[in-house]
Length: 153
Image 1: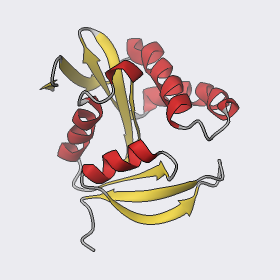
Image 2: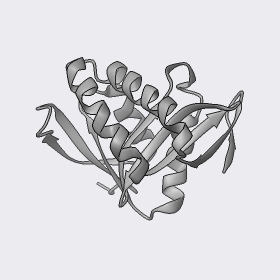
Image 3: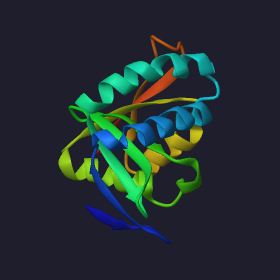
């Protein structure tokens, strides 16, 4: 799949083994930036598990000018996350990855931390609705379970 942002063309493809180093770098940096309310140690300790799980997961990778700039993983219609390299945020990459999942799945769910205001606003803008507020059992942080298409209130 190819897409056009406001300034650069990019391509979306399934995760390849050679993508892993760049994807893992984006995963750690994006989590540290977006979730500064969770100790850095949590993300660093989970990196080996993520490295092991990614090759078995359903993951889409976004490239621009031959460089990996974002990725997203999904499990049975539940989006595990959308991660975009910091300099490339707000250029349509997250939206393009999300739109590819919307094309492939009739319904989508995800969890987003209540404190991650920018991600929450993004998902609401993209047609998701809040289903419930719950506590993440691992981090203790409050998170919204969200779904698309949104539920009419």
